[in-house]
Image (cartoon, rainbow, N blue to C red; front, side, top):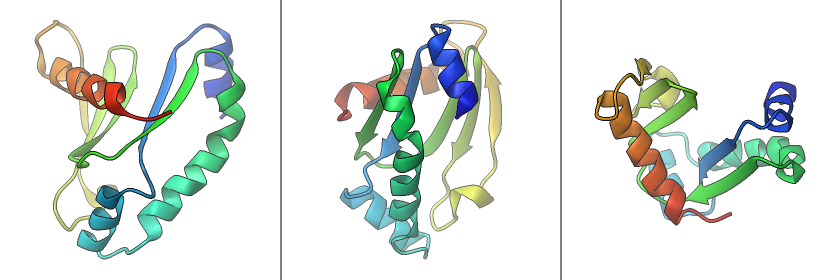
Length: 123
């Protein structure tokens, strides 16, 4: 949290996009993975932990209710992609490390995906 806050204060744009814990997609995924309401609880916990960041310039947190195909973690040109596999908790799925080198490379696909969801998410 301290690192994220420090980066935001230094002018870095921080965008955090989480599944809506009250939305039907999170409920469906929890059922599919056999973890019930624990996924929604983890998101609610993250929102509480992120609360101090909300007052900082350059930090925005939004919620979405789209199908969760993957988790995307990005820092500059590096992306960590956690593809979701049906019935498998994300923590047991592989993580791919991609580096953006061209406007049309594989990483660009995930940049575009994130941006599309971001646009329709709620603050």
